[in-house]
Amino acid sequence: MDTQRFTKDNPMRVGLGGFGNVGQTLARTLSGGAIPEAQLTAISAADLDAAHARADAMEPMPVFVSAEDLPAHADVIVECATGEAFPTIARAALNAGKILLPVSVAALATHPEILDLAEVSDGTMRVVTGALPGLDSIRGARESGIHSVKMTSNIRPESLAREAYIVDHGFDFSTPPASPVKVFEGSAREAGMAFPRHFNVGIALSLSGIGPDRTEVEVWANDDISGTSHEVYVDSNAIKLTLKSENLPSPDNPRTSSSVAPSVMAALRSLVSSVQVGS
Image (cartoon, rainbow, N blue to C red; front, top):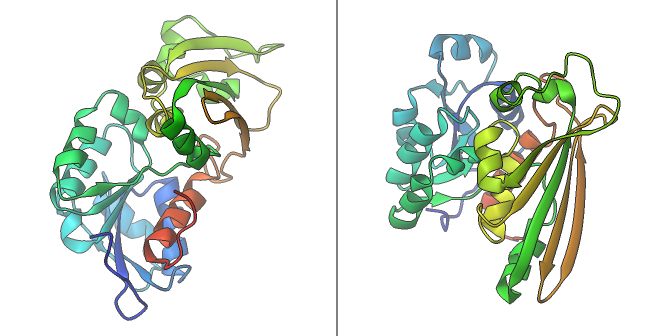
């Protein structure tokens, strides 16, 4: 599927699995013609009537279908829903032999069978890297042999406050802490399970490197930052890497990074481009 050449006259059909903040941003951008070789053709959402109402001004109007029916209307499916919806969207796309661009990859921590399905199905899963830099460099380092990967994430307290892990472990951020507080230390898999909304980045990092069980993660609640920051340290035979990103919150939803939708658009653009940059 991903070797097909898409053009303006034969555009790549894009389906959105999810129509929240990221999905609506992508829909507006695609409908505005940002990628001439791509066309938004279908949307699935938990509430199809509400999604249809929010998409009222789109032209041409995509069809609104269930997640299971999305592959019948698309060549590429962008999962931008929730961790709970991720398995249904992913299975439908991969079983139908489609290209899947997943955003909610923290769900792979609890649904590793989706990775197995990607191996045996006719579909392809291309993880959207979102807020993390340097994954090409980490994939290159993996070829030489990686000794260790560690990610330290600083997240604003109010963004963490309602997470079940934070509540269950007795952290109270109703008053912002005077200094950063370490709230988690463990593997990327454990981080993905503890913070399913925040650690798509950790799972993406682990897939590019040494896996979710060997990738180390620290999480700090930090009131002195404007948005989430991630620092990644990689020790390998070929290179030692220190990578840092500072991600601004979306103005439409402060709990979502502004970098997510542009990262998806970049991934979509790469599918129609005759020149590929990166490994």
